[in-house]
Amino acid sequence: MLDRKSPKLLAHLIGMSFWMCGLLHTTSCAQAAEPKNNAALVAEVMAAERAFAKSMADRNLVAFAEWIDEEAIFYTRIHPTRGKAAIVAEWTPLFTAKQAPFSWEPEDIVVLDSGGLAMSAGPVRDPAGKIIARFNSIWRRDANQRWKVIFDKGNDVCRDSKTAG
Image (cartoon, rainbow, N blue to C red; front, side):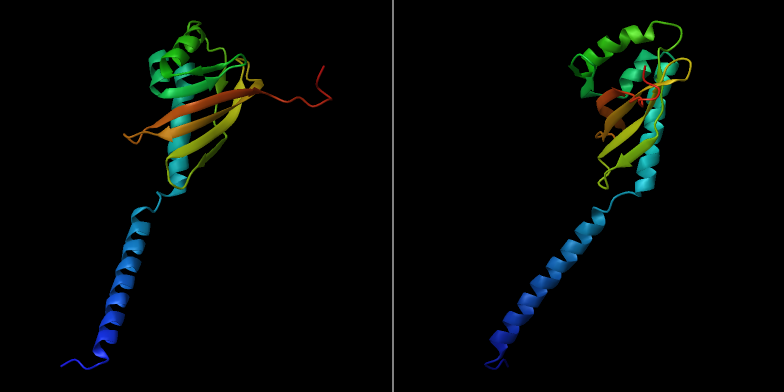
């Protein structure tokens, strides 16, 4: 039979049980939310950026459009262009010539540990290979686990005072 101390002991055991359940729940949630290896995510975004750039080199507007998110914003010198359809329409003239007017390649990629957003950056080159700008793109992983560009902006290359003229 239970003596007078039993209610306190019972309350203590119930409290410990709730604490242990909470600890186990927190641990299992933390393990479930553990991100993919960040190096693997960086490699995925690097491959996506290279394929995106290849679509310009290959003069393939359809492939180019596949990398752009529906709600993307691309910045130009004049204004931001909002939405995939408007971006593709604005970039279409850049795909008409036999040779691409410029090319780009990723140099830096960083990915959030959650694996949902990434940033890529690198040089933009003219057809002769001269660096004429730098790009910065933000990528988002969509529901199908495919990376899509959501923000893109190019910036002029800063020239040092010795070569500026």
